[in-house]
Amino acid sequence: MTTSKRYYQDFAVGDAAESSVARTVSESDVYSMAGLTGSYNPLHTDKEYMKETEFERPIVQNTLLITLMEGLSKRIPEWDPDIVAAYGREGYRFVNPVFVDDTVHLEAEVVDKREKEGGRGIVSFKHDLYNQDDSLVATGEYLLLLEATPE
Image (cartoon, rainbow, N blue to C red):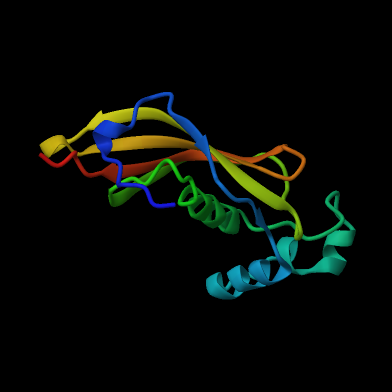
């Protein structure tokens, strides 16, 4: 299904949608992120160490969760924003652990808009990531600078 690009003016505060797919986190995802970042924190990569913690098994890195949130946001079929640039992230919280083999999906809502020069504008999307039990696992705002509607 193809959609046409949506511009700054096409988004309204209160618009909400969710990703058209979910994503199961694999052990390979966790180790790929560790290798990419060079961070082999035992919280994420040491099964024996984690057996002695309240989690009892490794947890998924928050950096991987942010990456999955961004990827899942691209899988919202009714939204295809004409992005000029990422503008920032605010207030990210990781409220419940995610483990290997958990399946996550994203719900998003437009929570703020600020016009910039030339009709472009910043749109703040609240991203909520849920696991297969519909427990909130991560939340935060993703800000995008969007192109203006062409004249």
